[in-house]
Length: 224
Image (tube, rainbow, N blue to C red):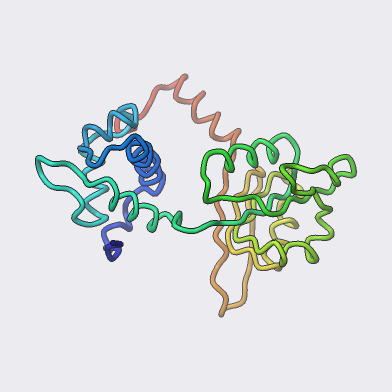
């Protein structure tokens, strides 16, 4: 049974919750019924401390019992609800070069709830290709194709100079969440009576620079 979402969840890291869900799903598939915070930490390769796990999971509701651990089935169900993984999400990818292709292959293999439903590009050498039964269409035809695809999420794997225009096109066609791999900040405006568009920027080069900084200077003392 899904528990009401407490206000204390506001400060909890969503990536950590996703990591818990993935590890617990693996334990569930292996036939486990309960798990301790120490056991979950071990499944996560001890990348997250058991004290942090207990703190995060306590924000979801009373799923654990001292000395007994957590009941896996209801916890997986609650995490799936919190993360929006209890139903399917359709994805439209704009830009199907190396990154777009790699993302499509990765996300469909990693998480069954995400399904690529539309793919767009503007390169004549890419348009017309077929990936797992989905034709790569010209981004200029998005207004005709995207509504029928019923996509919820857009993914931008385009050069920086094409990111803003691509994002505006997706937003105008009803996409309300965008994962942006382009090294460019997006500025999207919507009418006052329309919910804001959710944008997550993933700068791969920037992430690599964090690693090179840590290798050069060292990690912060409070870094996990």
